[in-house]
Image (cartoon, rainbow, N blue to C red; front, top):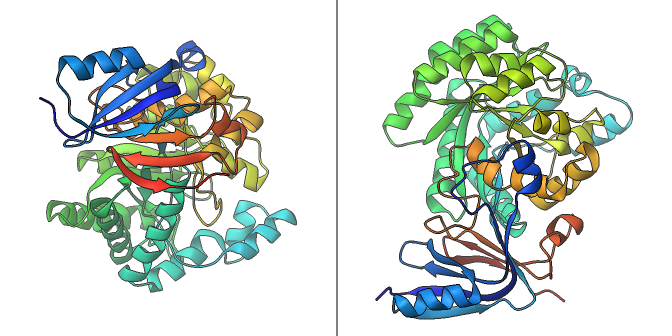
Length: 430
């Protein structure tokens, strides 16, 4: 007998996203393949937190009977939808310092680099984050993660990068690990010591510091169990780190055992897609100025394109060419890019803006916020779809069709969120 089972019963739709073990979708598959079970149920083994069965009501009931399952709790889902927990593939969630005033500067015509040169931007956040204690940063992070959870995010990529020197980068990565250990969200940590050129250094000096000082310290603390960093990142951009400098940072990270997942081609063309192909990167974010050749290079491995429509929206710049990337058979993922520059914690809102600004279909946006976002983080064997054996990360939507989570954008009708079968968020809806 299987014990301690949780049954989500009789949902209007169970949106698996994929149902054949796919680790990502690309090209026409991303556009046209959404696995949806009408009038379905989902069974969770609460001992493991994994999905034990998913299918029509009759199929799941037959599984329960055949395996003599002890269903200890049932969630009635009539008229509602089950979705996979969303995966936010790019965030900067650990920082201190208020940059609300910069929004007005941008509305008045200041560019991203104008704000930087005026003493704001990453430099301002870096100064504030260096001054903050580990406990202060952790408290700020916990509040942000709780808000992400309320919008259905159950797995999130989180970067360092507001230290730009050893001690603060280590502090940020420790905070990310502590939050991941405490849950409920799963956090995939990224070392981004090359997020900007710090004050008083040249780009060359910053690269040497990242490679020779920061990275060894990061890996030492990982070996000691003080962080669980998985990825290496760099801001490959004109006026920040050029192609060759970015390659040196990324190669050093890969040599240390980290996965390449970096910023590129946001404000100008720096051949980031080509660099991703050369290094067989796992993912590249932004890509507003990716070239046709870069897209072709990314499609070979393939390298995931993590698109950040909220950033293009806030900066009022041309958005990434989502249609070209999808047509080029590059798997497209989405991230909120939550940071002081783009203060958005909502994947439903991110999906909506991706449809409006980047002309993605709702199906493409959902794939990008679930299975493909998980794939960009090497997590699609565990999350990103509602399939047997995966974590029971479930969003319960109080709506008759799943599209409402995108359509209702800033206030989606999310009634509850479950992480590994455990209720971690609920809301009374009118």
